Length: 563
Image (cartoon, rainbow, N blue to C red; front, side, top):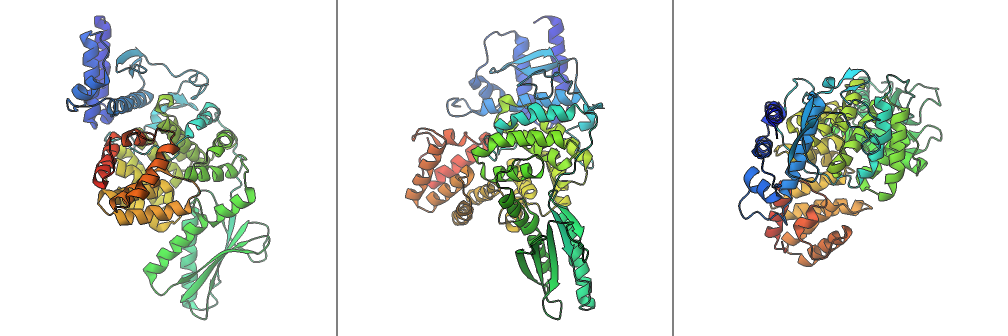
């Protein structure tokens, strides 16, 4: 390396090390310094994973590269941090990680062109989209104080295993969206709900309660992006798909009933009675009723699915199918989903909710396949969604998730908490925030995840698995087994996280035969040899060495074989 290149290499290193994202991640700083120093030494012998683990990452001399993928995972993390830095900051040159090598390289900083069929756009300059500078999409900014990152890395990548196929979403949909200066957005055909509230004729208390309940219903229902709320007008028909009717039972206001009716047929689709004598309990039950109605797997979504069946049209039908895929991961849905998500982004480029879902899919795809990841693509979509609707819980959480997946826990927590504040009733947002916080070693993460389960019995399976794993870590095997059994019984498809925690809980309760049966089935589901080590199996869907080590510790405590 000549002197000019060596100087530029050092300048880029120092520029990176002064960035808050790196400053808050000492392990990444140490790894970056080691790689640059080795490059400057002129040593032509390629670095090996063992050297990286022991000399750069502080592992012991007995580190086993055959069973521990820690160096590879950390190099992948550094690669993503470098990509995110140069996406945000730009520059004439950049540092990169050589493909399939433990080597730092200095190269010109150019926008990706025709990578995997042009995933960012055909030769588009990703530093400027729709005429705006990328700096307006600064991933380090929190929703209020523009806080900085702390460099932790979330662990969970198996939530939507297989979303790699959704790369076509970005291949076509994102390029279409980002290349447009403007386009009139069609109205997405979300379900329309008319609220039919009493006029207060039953008396003063009932009248006040009717107004109060109506306000809570409007606030709660409006927090979910996939429905539209209207005030019911007597004698007016055809303006809604559903009617949500509130009526008091009896002469007083001690008990009320909520009914969801089909507007056309008048059929009662759902009803729930609520007792009002205890204010705190009543308000909690009313929140649960709202979730049962409007949640991702609530009665409205279930009714629409039963009507639409396998409809993958752009817009709301596609969003419904995506929700089902996130929960159950049915492989048959991947191909039609990649098409309908692309069409949805193309047809509704100014719809914040659709862009939020697109960002969710992009992030999950990148996390499942980091080698094919498109740096910053999920964050671009998320920040565009948030710019369109700053009060959208889904859009704010898309920003949070993008930050978590970039290794920026502090920013992720800040945006995630804002999303929860905007809609505390969305179990997916609350639960996944808790899941990511657990992966970032935030103690309150379990509280968020557990709250999602308590509010919504149909919360995503991955959230239940995360809570059960925390129970196991505390030694509460019976609670973990009861929780996982409940969710496994309600799911038509297997979830590896639930299966794993159920198996470990069974072993800790001395039900070894059941534990071995479940473990054998789990290994077979991944197409691995029956004698595969636990670490090998866990690495199929978990990318955090720390989490894997935690689980292997539970393995040892359970008395099962660990090799």
